[in-house]
Length: 121
Image 1: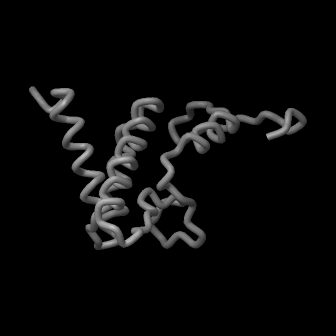
Image 2 (image 1 turned 45 degrees about the vertical axis):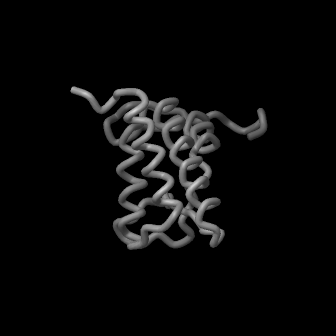
């Protein structure tokens, strides 16, 4: 965005004002596996929160899934948006496929929970 472009703001559905510039900056920090849908169907978000492609090499794809999990955790922590995990899981379910990338993703999330003790009551 050039400095010549106007800085605009709007309101979300709760009436809270937000800056378009702030929204653009969040977009640049989205996890690498999030993509914009070209033709969203009714009920779908504009973004695809699980846009991944396997390489065909199991160990490589599991490692990629683990990387995606760390990226998702980073984004949720930085932006304070834990509900993004819901959107990721929803897109996984909609695709009806659970392969090595998904295995790595959930393995890394499980490892994080155990390592940090965040799952304890």
